Image 1 (cartoon, rainbow, N blue to C red):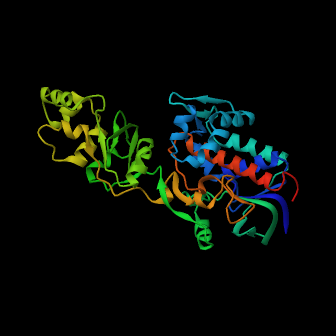
Image 2: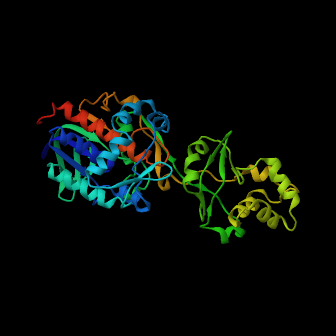
Length: 386
């Protein structure tokens, strides 16, 4: 038996922020995680550059989530607060041309080390290889352990990247106990495409200067032709619409009207590939996609250049997605993020039913909901001792 004021289950960004906030309010905090080390997915996300948040106004920032229940939490701990928090951990930051905010070090590891050190100095206890078995019980290397806590914060993550700890196993357990849980679905995911042999030379190549068209909306964004299909930021931005059944097309020349594309092609000479390259400046990867999805091309392919239908087999599997939609329903939670039928138990992070695009939104909402739940948990025990 171990005792604490606040027990946090899950040591990702949401769980660690809940622990920090509760500890700052005076609570004795214990954090338990089933993995050998904390924040594994956070570290992996930072390998290509840790995008902490997005520098933009509150209205467009909130709109990126489309989730009114998140808005008070994002107002309380939004981009400015994320920046101040990271700088307080000794991390110099910079803002890119698109408003994305990164540590100068780019990696997540320096920030995480400083964060864990601050938590330890505040008296927070971290237990790893503790596998949650329900309630406040855990299977540990030393046998079963029960924790006596004044409040509990669930920060169990989504259902992607299971090898890093987010396997979504908790959803079945909570659903069996009568809590409403929305099915998980991939978010910010690539598309599955079964390529023909002629695409082999183009695998791994980026596709730039195009727009992805879903319904009547065109979004600029780069993506990559991968062995498994299409991946990258541009694809991730439209994956929610594709998941909902929207058709996807690529505008290979978004700065030109159809008539101008047609005029330039008509003036060019040579093979269709040479005309596409010389008249329109299409690179080999873009031409390959055009041939893959629209061959044989009509005599005037201008309309297809402007709206190339993408034949795909749907989103990549759930475990490959950067994040997930679905999770614990908002109907199960009050405005404090406390489970309505379990006084003293709170939930936060990606395990809640929300989604957001990449670009700093995901981490910010995890931190914001963690701070909200941690503060509420501390208040639930009088910010004192259990």
